[in-house]
Length: 117
Image 1 (cartoon, helix red, strand yellow):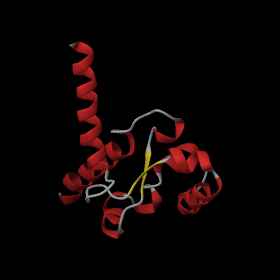
Image 2 (cartoon, helix red, strand yellow; image 1 turned 120 degrees about the vertical axis):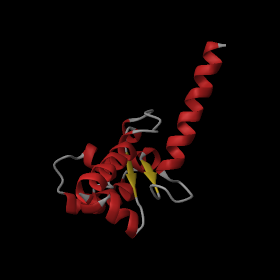
Image 3 (cartoon, one colour; image 1 turned 45 degrees about the vertical axis):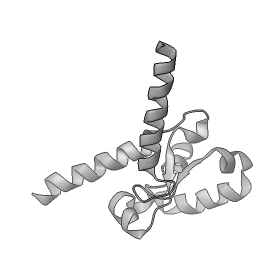
Image 4 (cartoon, helix red, strand yellow; image 1 turned 180 degrees about the vertical axis):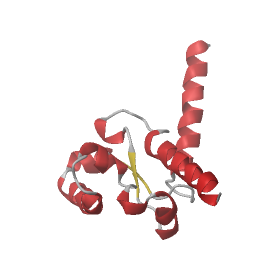
């Protein structure tokens, strides 16, 4: 019973975190990496799925190499380092996914209201 109720909720949260609340201004910020702590990584990003942007850019790279590839791109690709959307957590204060979702949604509402006025 727990598997049927909790697991889908975790999967849905992760799916939203990977693809929503992003600026979509560049190929490097249409999805995100979440470099979270151990508890959030265990719950939402096991097997390096938290390096979702890297996975989208290089889909043939095995999951166990995504972190290493991300680190190499941060060092050797100024374009990636500048434009990649990286969050420090899903929910904790700071540069969290939750903050992106709430702020980007509010900003879009303001833009829509100013266009309609």
